[in-house]
Length: 286
Image (cartoon, rainbow, N blue to C red):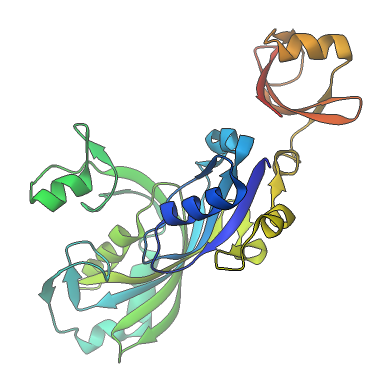
């Protein structure tokens, strides 16, 4: 079984938990293209078998989220699972729809963002959450991200939450975004809810749920093959002689542009190849 499935990750489990469960069912190598926090739900693409070799082509995908931001409380993890650091009254003026929409629009575009301390980013060979758990201070470098769009969905003064949808680049930390938005509104806050709606072209529409009913047959039914995954890429057909050379790692001369190609022989999908400087070489072979 080689390809990718789209899982709708439930709240309360880690991405590793989902990977482990699917691995036990398919008895193949399984990986993912980017973690979701235990608090978060939604789209989690899982790579199965030789599909794991496609990770390098999928990790840079843009993402879309449905976000809940609770105002008036700050936590050390920037989400609902952390320890409360501060509580603050939220002024009535902050809840004005026009005010919130204006602030949200200010975050659209390229910008530098400081990742949260409770994250897996490494500094000096150690993950940031390792420093945080030990109470050690370390300078967290900012990174460039881009917010493509951000739209207010709802305002709830009773629960002191606002909900918004955001489309953003790879590497964007929504917890940090929530903290920055709260600050721009003139208060404090943390991410109280997160649902990932989209990763690249993968959406919740074709996702499956990881529950007790999940079995190998259901996974096979929903798997996206490597051939289908790269259906937008051009096709190159090799005769038997060239195919043997290609499979043995010999680079073949082609005048096509530098790109990924689907490789075929006698109508059968063989795998993927890449052309660089006029030379075709093997990449992922089934």
